[in-house]
Image 1 (cartoon, rainbow, N blue to C red):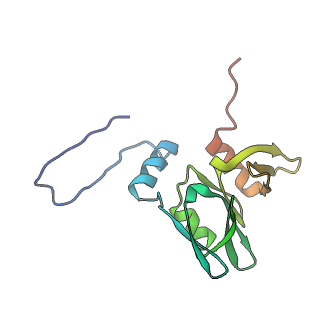
Image 2: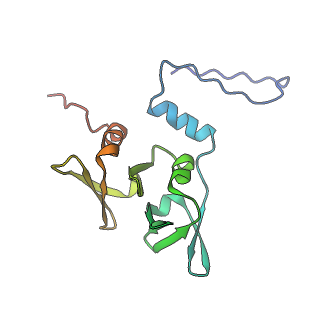
Image 3: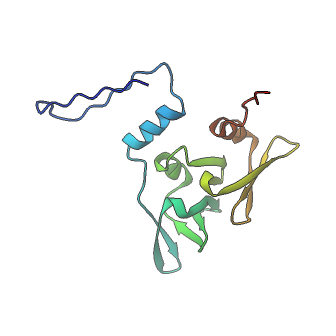
Length: 152
């Protein structure tokens, strides 16, 4: 990767241009950073109390009926954002969609088990397990580079 920096007081605004053959994980990481996707906090409700949640402390987000909840070590908290909104502003290299109703923090995942029907069983460090639907398995495997061949 070649990086060029042009510092000139005559520039009216900062402009970033990326020249690449295609978008890969490193380009997505740069775009996440440039688009300020590193959200500082999310507000979660527990009854009448409002809690400040760091995204890094959230194990996974899940929907239950019409409510989206953030599961943490301290319990589950209702958040106002929809899952698709969370997916847009959370770092895409850390948070991945498992199913229509779950977004997981990969840093909180303990291990995976493949199922015979093409799904993945995802085990979190907290002991909770969720299932990744077949629709999202390929994206998860690509993100985690699970399809690499071992050099023997």
